Length: 276
Image 1: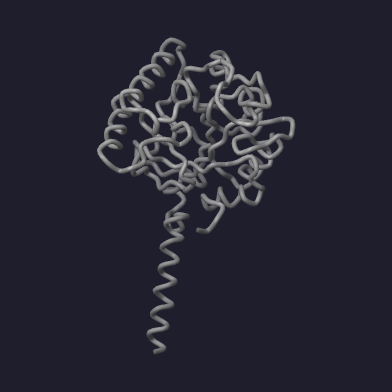
Image 2: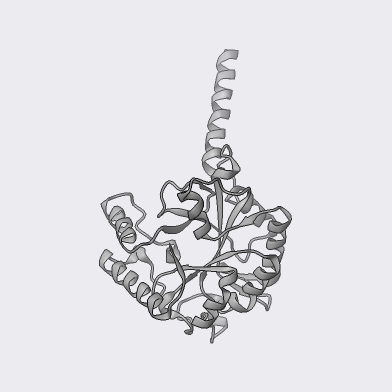
């Protein structure tokens, strides 16, 4: 009876460790783990919501990353490591910001320069320099919120790499393959016309893509490959195993404006704020 109980306890502990490993990548070496954080807009008036973080909170988070020696990277640098079979630096992290809010130029860019951090900005390419016309409390409270213009997107290049975030902020999960193809064509037309330097990585708007593993998903990934998209980023809230196993299902850790500092630290360390 004692042996049965011990065996059951050992089995239970192994099961817990396996679950923990799946969730948090516990047994992978640092060179095989990549954290990618997801942000959007930054406020300077104390406002915060799901996609808006206070400037003070962002600075506190960057202080944590700097103090703990996290190494910020562009996706183009990550790709160079993968293609050349080079291990990642210790504590590698990619800071990503979606949409291209003007505050990413006025607020984020100076902070990145002060910390000597790098970030990736996923741009809504059909809305460059325009007034933002999709939902969100921060947007509705600031009626004239705009996205960065072409000059500003070029100016931030010392610390910010650009990527795709669709043509007009559409959710790919709601589009047909034909509509997605047209979206990609329009994105590339803007890039060529504006002579922008854009790394061919796509952050799915709203995290939306064909999630079911079937022929339709395979066709989507083939379409992305056809148009030269090398990475597709979802949400997922997990640390990535590196080298990437599926370049079109790379996971990001969603950093929300209402996250406490302790929640932020847990997300960075574990990829999630909860154990299960």
